[in-house]
Amino acid sequence: MPAIKKPEVAGQEVSSTAAPRPVPIGGTVERPVAHPEAEQLPSDELQIVVFRLGSQYYGVEIKRVEAIIKMQSITRVPHSHAYVRGLTNLRGSVLPVIDLRRRFALPDGEATKDTRIVVLMVEAEKVGMIVDGVSEVVTLAAGSIEAAPAMVTTIDTTYLTGIGKMEDKLVMLVNMGRVLNVASGD
Image (tube, rainbow, N blue to C red):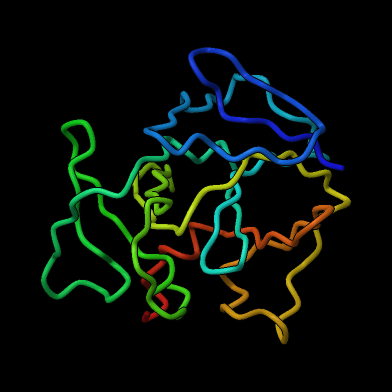
């Protein structure tokens, strides 16, 4: 079973091999940006933040995650792509926000108390992505990750780097660089 880590809370990091624990819902979870000199996981492991869209689980590398915040007011930008929800104010900075459901051509969903904006650093740009909920942070062994089979996925497999196999679920690993690439005519 993969080791499960909760995000750092007040400078403490909790690690366990017990059942997955949810990320705290009541507020912002932040972690420092990973620096190239910082200690890295062995190349045969990948630490990911697992989130949900509908009943499907997805993941992004934790080193890209700047913060996880509650849903907040978003200002629509005219003539932008349908999946771009707009802009929001994050601690005094303007943050573009995308709706992953729309980007993946999934049905729209209603915002709930679990809806979050995951703030990511993608190619030197900060971007927020709306997800239905964030469930956990896990470390996956390289042997538990397989290529995404094109004929069985519900989203374009070019957005995926692979499928992570966990004891109780599969997690689709998202390539955020490709998700945000609008040069393909999306």
